[in-house]
Amino acid sequence: MTFLLGSGAGFSGDRTDAAIPVVAELIRRGQPSALVFETLGERTLAAAHRAMREAPDAGYEPLLSELLAPVLGDCLSHGICVLGNFGAANPDGACQVVAELAGRAGFPQVRIGRVHGDDIRAHLGSLDLQRWEAENRELPDEASLISANVYLGAVPLTEALALGAEVVVTGRVADPALFLAPLVHHFGWAWDDWDLLAAGMMAGHLAECGAQVTGGYFADPGYKEVPDLARVGYPIIEVEEDGSLVVTKPPGTGGCVTERTVKEQLLYEVHDPANYLTPDVVVDLTSVAVSQVGPDRVAVRGIRGKPSPQRLKTTVCYEGGWQGEAEISYAGPNALARAQLAADVLRERLAFRAPTELRSRLDIIGHASVFDSDAGDLQRTAMGTGNGDYRLRLAAEHAERRWVERATQELLALYCAGPAGGGGVRRHYQRRVCTASYLVKRSDVEAFATLFNPRSDYHVAS
Amino acid sequence: MSPVEPTLVTSSERVQDGVDGLTVPLHRLAHARAGDKGDRLNLALFAYDPNHYALLMDQVTETRVLALFAHRGASRVRRYPMPGLAGMNLVIDDVLQGGVNGALNLDGHGKTLSFLLLGMTVEVQKV
Image 1 (cartoon, chains in turn cyan, brown):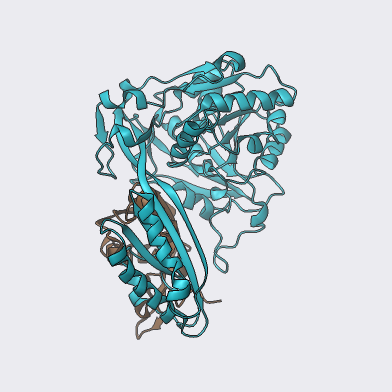
Image 2: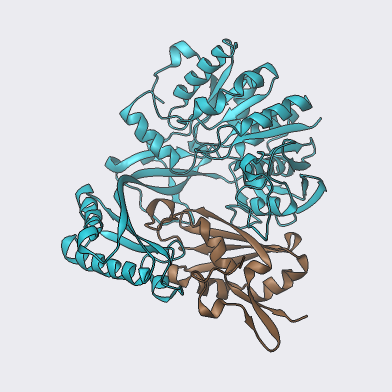
């Protein structure tokens, strides 16, 4: 029998009303199903650890209540399993919120599974770490360390489901493992049936970014049209026991599911398509085919799997000093020349008003910015009328906040001491978080699941 | 509307009508999405018309893509052909100038860079 995987969110900050039509469709179909919230990016976890340091009750997904409240009661009453990495740095805190929401929805006896083992900060120093291929960073010193979390696979999540969990709360896990777990639990797939595990992982990969497979992050007017993007439907993946997949979305929602939307998401954040590494299986996409099998229905075939890797990816977050930004606008006749003069003045001022180790960058938004290098190569060569609407942006970083403040203050001073007609200055500062990734031995990671007990477990440090 | 934004396209990338063929932005023939991990960017590129796959393979080479991202410090490009999808995956190393956590760029993820690739020109035969 078909199992349905619904996506309720694709990142922290996603639309909080997205899950409602997905759950309505899962209920209408009446088939076994799960709803997944993926809300934990690379940096989201560091922000969560920081929040928890300042308030021990914080540290889980800040929008958790807004995301879950509209659908949790319906999921529990219809046997739709809910899984989410919204536990972030504080899965126990998230479990407590889920328990309270469920109680309010009339389900005080809700069974909440809590996954353990991703947080390896306590014994990071004693682990055999290999550098992750795309980076080359030294391990940060203990004082600046914020967090260290392993990307767990689906095994401990299936343990939670085997314990009878109706809601599964995790911290760091590989995003698609949130989707693979209910499939393995439902179909009883073996942990060495690599092709099936690969198909399940790719079902998760396709759905984990929410609308990115149903017309979100896709529209290019005149080239790639997407209807009703304001009400884009989040994905539902139909999965068969043999690993067949169909990507679709709830009827009556906006967006579209086409071969093109599916292809773009299939390779999203993939490097070597023959060896897409996940904790539970190495996926080979080289024989994949996508085909439109109905309106807003695309089948994905030919996913193959290979044995899982011996090491798991771990991301370490550490303090990265301060970053500040400040902007000022110039518009109308000769505006580009005025913005460029302002940039030159700022460069000169920073050269004698800021320490040499201050790292900075100047963009002229509207002329050359996001495509440009830190050195501003495109700013000097890009074409333009020069009479448009430009915004000079300074970004600066330093270990000490005062130097970042000084740099942005120099931009502010362009009001009175810079070129003519500058306006609309905004500035802000933030602590920066740096990340570095490593590979740890699978055998060094102890992942498991427990059922959450609201009274005794609350406030226990994770 | 024009698909060619004058502020973002250098003079050599403007549409040119040559003797043997037309020089057009890749944007006319293909669509793309960017993804990042660390300081590494992947650009998945797909021909709208599968008949253009061979043209993409001929002209969107590792060398040309490396040159396109040279100003960003790109050190290596690897191209993974995906003929079954009429596309390719381009993996570019060291192009994010620090990545999402280290970059001073407004777009530390490099999410907008799919459209830098789509601004690259290719030659198509006149019909």
